[in-house]
Image 1: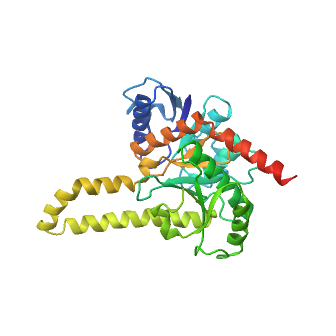
Image 2: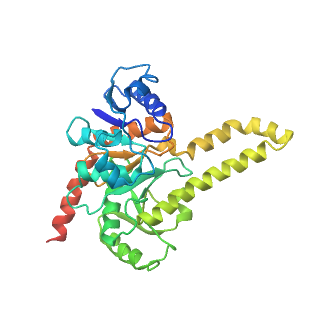
Image 3: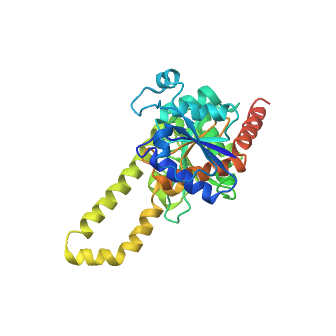
Length: 333
């Protein structure tokens, strides 16, 4: 199995990507990794080359570039070359922590959509208090969605949780402003009706405040709402830990208490960290493409590789494609 990584995208590239890759090949003997990027920079951090190769380019797509223009103009960028490796069959999956819009554009342009999936969705795993996590989709691939798109997101998310996370009959919830039937805007009401009739374990409407408690395994919403939820969770977690740090270092007694609590606080921080949940899958494409967090460290890259490996091993893309085909057949008679 070959996993291709855009090693120039993200805040901590390429050091984090190289370190994550070296850790992954130590853990998984069945993978080979291709790092796409500036060979000189990559070689500075690459101390173990077993099962790791480099595809050289010194061109990259910046975070502030317009996605479509960047992908079309920078055909030799690390991101575009990584996607092309998968398209042309030299790689089984690709990972990037670079420009999200550009990765979506490159994926659609070069790999293409699964037949029957109208719009791909961006789907990260997010933490829950029990440590199991939940899948949220969409978080920004499509800010203007239709009810049919939310149904397709639910089906793809359910397949992923069952195949990769080994959740039996994943609970699917529709993010809404209340849990009662009939709540929400027109999109929510139409989506509720479609989800109620689908072959899913649909538990109804769920509120955003209950997501971290593990109310569902798959949370479905439009990309606008999903992005707000994602950024709110990230911002709240960062603020809480900053407040704790300030309070626990404000006086000598607090510092002594912090020393005692340090192991517990570390465990909480790890449980709430995105780093251990992998990246956000671009569901609906014809091959596994994973968007890692822009500030991914080596741990996050390692877990994104683990996630990509699981998706390839479980043939998730093919299963999603088969489900989409069956749904299309049923819809048309």
